[in-house]
Image (cartoon, rainbow, N blue to C red; front, side, top):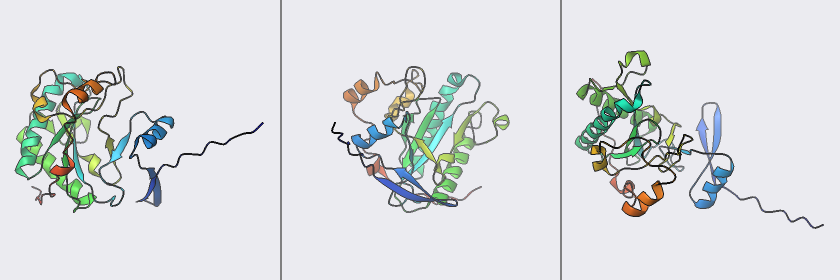
Length: 232
């Protein structure tokens, strides 16, 4: 019997620094690489906020509006209001906000950046923006990390902006009932009272994209400079 060995597909990787050494991550830039990840039992891919050639210089700021544990659906109007207010604040700072359902419990708002600042600078600025936003809507939003200090308010989480942290990729499916998908939104969709984090699923998202295209198609072309802000 002749055994023919199939060639092992080569997935491009990048080696990046971490505390105590380095770590290798796959680069998922094409369908073949995505299928390889699926074959490794990856259901929900998460991505860095930076690219492989400059891992310490993010090209996105990420804000995660996360509801309280108790009755998260009841807090979604506050999440929508917070996301809209965040969009206005980002515009004041010379940035453009792009919204996305998380496919789980909340909304993400992403501001594309020119890659001039490092991760520590980006995280600090994101924190200041979140504090400013929470001060504008104190009855709805908070930046308090400890749950007992949130007072039933929506958390504006900026931890994803830390070096080497990841966030759910656009159009990633979640391992939840109904297979909801993290779905990029047109900004005006935040006005829709029927919007919720699991609105689109693996069964419905393709038709949505076919009908209206990708609302994030120009996200890279909208990159702005990280603003210089003072705390307090």
